[in-house]
Length: 513
Length: 115
Image (cartoon, rainbow over all chains, first blue to last red; front, side, top):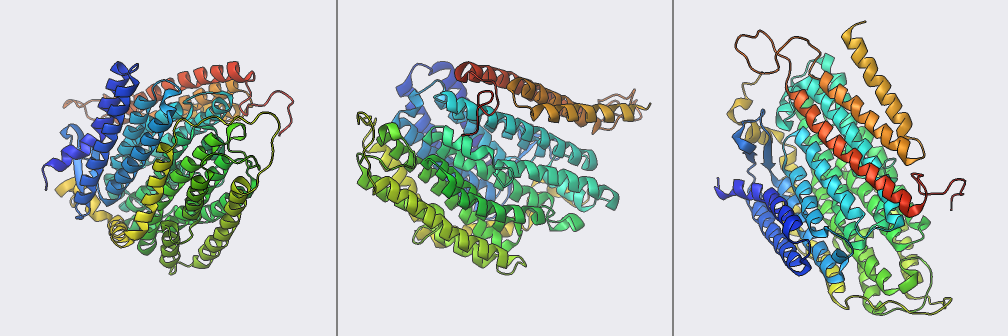
């Protein structure tokens, strides 16, 4: 084992927390310096995540006992292929979003943007790395508290209104999380996820009802984070009301729910759990299919481009969760590929929409015909590419992702439903985005009063950042071979939880209880 | 009445009151409802370590049996988080009320129709 790997794992948590605290204390009035520090730490995090991913791609599972307290008594951080991949995705997205926020001056609109961003990353990285269920709750709270601040960044009445709803629904979600964790602890007597998997595999039949209740309550919480219908109502309001940069970062927030569903679904309620194996699947699949339909139909009901981007995030979460919820190794690999794609595509769409809104002056992102605006040639191209990406047309990675998912679920008994839903809703999505694009870019109409579109803060920086994210989608298609090889290996590792359990519990795993 | 019955019914009543208040239309009852829910969950977590009396929560060679110390640590964490979040929600609700002029959670004025 490479000696530097544990320190890199911890560094991915320490870097944001140390720099976040320091910039909160010392850099409050030094915008230039705090931007430099923020971008520098984003780059460092990408480098750390890349190194961890290269290490994890070898197939070993690393476990780091915090404070050297042995699992299952202490809290462990666990690095496997899935967590490394999520770390890399988060750090790349954070780099792009931070660049966008700096070049468009969003971070000047209020206090503490940079520290909040760091704490957001602390929560995200921690949630991806932790091997302890209660610790997962704590990191959820860290990332939520930071997200409340980021959501409200810049303030204004509509944002505050959406903020109250977002905060309240997430607090109720946190309460439910504790109920689920409490139930599982009460029955199994452990909070370590690997240890819990061992205990549940050996649980007497009398306890299985309570364990199932705990597991399904947890699934409700994760489904709330993933914006699964009928728990999606918070998302359009919150994402449409916040700034474009923050909405783009929040593209990873729904994936936290998906990640937690994958982790608990394959580890705690994996194949060894007997009658409890994959117990969330039958509940998630119908909800995911309805989510796809509602998400893509919602594209026709919106009045602004931002809401449109938010509904397309819901639709893509439905596609992702429908592939996850069949809980088959041949569908999980494509699901992870689609997860990478949909995060970058959703973020790119939010950035492009924000760029359009900035140049349209008083109309903002409203879906109405208006006067022509600056740089509309570039922006129409970017909007076209982002729409292709999120809907899933060739040549970008959304098409490959959906194709792989359709292929992966073929052996599942519900395949016909998934095929029909994904194919029909893709057509609906194409129509909705074609309608929006032609309205914004091709139709022009005079408006009342003076036309004085504000001069955008920057001419090219924002466009280049959004284009960079779209180039990421292109790279996902071009590098499809290596990426799918990695995601397939990840899926194989997820469905062999014995390796994870052995890495966490060590040699004691065999003779426990 | 047994201790189990008392604790269980207390959790039930607190949860019911919390759910009812969270579903109200104005921010103040909603905040109170969230507080009730967090009290209920604290009791629930505490009870998950099994209800026993007169047992030490820490390791002692002389003691014959223990009460589980872990749920107490969890409750402590949950209390701290819930306390901080309640403070945040109160400030946020006040700020929203001052900015929008209404304390309805959905941000509409009294009697205003859905747009």
